[in-house]
Image 1 (cartoon, helix red, strand yellow):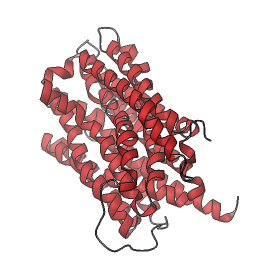
Image 2 (cartoon, helix red, strand yellow; image 1 turned 90 degrees about the horizontal axis):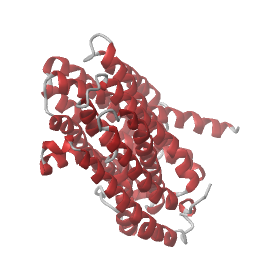
Image 3 (cartoon, one colour; image 1 turned 30 degrees about the vertical axis):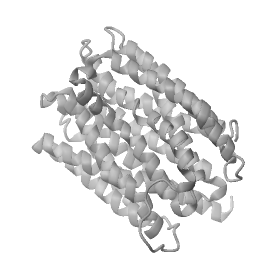
Length: 409
């Protein structure tokens, strides 16, 4: 391997570690939130609010972070954001003393800071890899974040269930990894070498609007909207069937969701965006129907196939969306388009709260809510397999988009 290639590998590994650490910290808190919901005797709706607040914090970060980094550079956004993620973890720890208020503030800060890291860090990683490895870098970014999302709740779920001081211990490892990532980021080179003046341009670039609304928006809804079933609705309903080790079960479920998402990132790159889109919708629907059986009395083993299918679907959707985002936008608008894609992705965190507000908190305790998710996933699969597939094939006439063809490698 040439020395320059070894340097690229080393620098991308440091940035990938940062994405992993931030992803781990953002989801390690999930079983802890379930614990606080029970410990403070909060409603199931309040549990969903903790995730909705996280999504609200993500919106300004996603909307402005990528576009701002297009002007001032990737490092200038990522480095201070990671520092603030550490502060957010500290706020989670403070909830042991200050309770519900500290959790709400911590979750908002987590969203605000993690959103900037995910968006800009993904773009930075692909730029460090170079044009010839950009698609592989998209797979790496999606994979390491999914691995962080998987390991965080699994480890913290075990710690919350069985170790002393469950309000403190689970977040210590994520805090340590984040501090290490701050040291590693100092040696990662900047990729925006020319400061761009003028106003920050946010929103979807005009040249990418058709692809965004027909492909990126619907596929983004498949990433975390169904995954929120595993974070909130599945554990709430399974607990009512008499299962007692609910924190471990929630952690294991999220491990399967995010672990299979990491695996799916490999196949999404292999199959291409045209195939990954409709297949993600179909697998999501199957996962939701398995999830319906998991919340029936004695049906908790169905949680494993439900989590695997929902996670694999989300991994296909995330990687497929990142590949298409990278290819639809010009370099000076790439961060802005990825930001818009992520806004729709993380809108999924708000869906259970919206269900509770519209249909009442009882909707969180009904299996029909899970079935509705499955039916919507089938509709999205049809959209991505029809108009979405057609628009990508038309775009494939542009030499920039060879990776969207099904079966490309």
